[in-house]
Image (cartoon, rainbow, N blue to C red; front, side, top):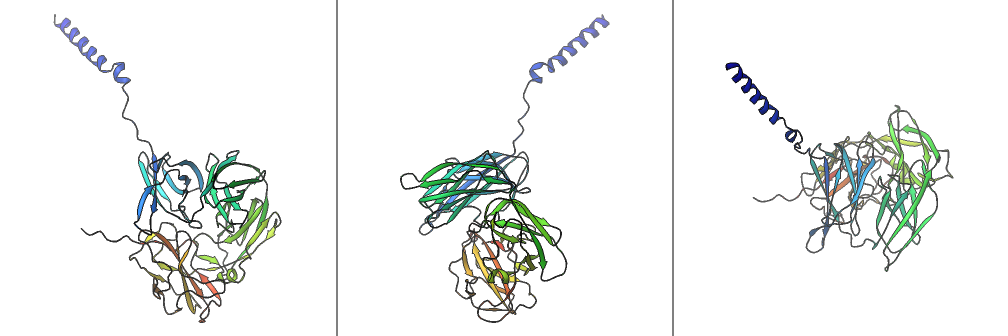
Length: 443
């Protein structure tokens, strides 16, 4: 009997164990694994001259770029709530956002600020676009065929030759917003490609938008090479060389090189007119600003006419700016201490005077700089002064707006005249990014 009882007890325990491991439990779904999501919200700042307000901006074209490769990875238009969602891998990214009736983010000729998307989490990014009452009423959208990402698309107005740009996403889609009514020629640029056929577009009051197809094909292209000399040192240091659109100042995709010697070369250059530039990145060097000032067209090239051209650059040590500025290895804007910040920099050898220039995020000069004749737009800053407060002389054309991002630049001049004589250096092209702090909230 004892043996029988023991057998029955073991059988009962086995039945309970088997029941606990039934198919129902095995098939029961586990907790869902969160996706890695980027949520982009686009807000528009409107009525800035009356009662400032923000609105959701629908149909904003949002292109997401891998910050390590500078390649677009995904693209979408915002919904009616001004939002769009992207499923991505963890990593560093940056955005380019455009919308009808608003200035783009980032502004032309301003480097986008990267951010980190966290694994199995939702990373939110908000972009505020400034309303542009003067923006054109039309836009052109289309597809690159076959689909190629990172194609720079230029819409050139046939009347005044003004140029407007957009970039294709990985699906080949592009849109160029804020075009004045008129006729346009559409051009496409990327290293290793050429446009197969001319494309034109017309937008008018009755049909303020147009859709086009831009055909491209692989292309061996032209080449450019030369040497890089250093005015401040005999060392051969590595600097980058890029080709840019001469009007929009956009870097032509694929036409950027970094050389570890005094020589450089760029290949697979598409046909077109470009602006050549050296030491665009933060490396402690800048193009000789005096040569640029005295030869304003000297860096303009046209291909294929300039195929196999030799173009030599002169590079010099940059003026080291101290504050406010992003670090050399980052393009995150630094938060300034005050709404009217004090700019400071290190003394530059042989400088007799300094010239300061402050631009808003759209590239407009709001204070300082100099015109094409060399006339400086602020009171003189002698070499003894290594810091100056914004608008110290009352000559600024606008106050700095809290929350907005700006960039400042300093030039060193080898003379004490009241205008530009010999520019011997400047601060770097991608330094001096700062953000104006918002007013403190009273508790």
